[in-house]
Length: 91
Figure (cartoon, rainbow, N blue to C red):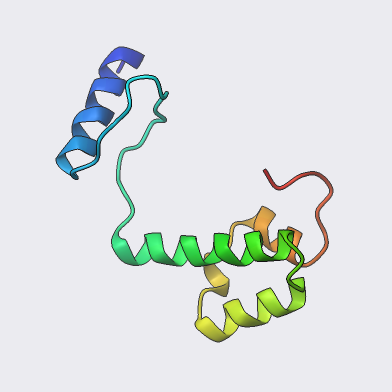
């Protein structure tokens, strides 16, 4: 599928989900969208990382994530950041 057809497919898929797609933003190759549960899990992981980046103790962010049962949903880079193992930037 060429990039123009891929963009059209992506726009149609997102619009079918009720999302407005700005014309000026590039789209990535998305074949499936995350469900509401998976989206919430990822948002909570990102929340823990954002809190830690603004000074919340990383060990407490990890403990909170485990308590909430979302520890397994972190990306490798996020876990490295929270464990203090990162070698570069997270974003």
